[in-house]
Length: 120
Figure (cartoon, rainbow, N blue to C red):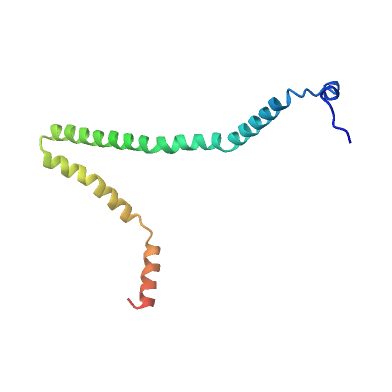
């Protein structure tokens, strides 16, 4: 079988000089497809994974400054730091008391029955 010459390939519409460019374009398109399926998808996640801790720290700092500011305002209005501490301490205490009173007593009965079966 005789090798095909350059003149025969050009008559068929195939440019021999264009072959390296077509291979490079093919490799580039394959690489961009793979990048779109992997790196581009992960890039969005990585951005949010990096931003969420920063946002949480900023929100925590804002909450701390807000709590300190409210305490100082409350202490000025009342005129006593001790009373302000008592009021601010009573809020989570009362919230815990409400949650304690609303607990499910059946769950407590089930766990105490299990403790009696074990013998403790």
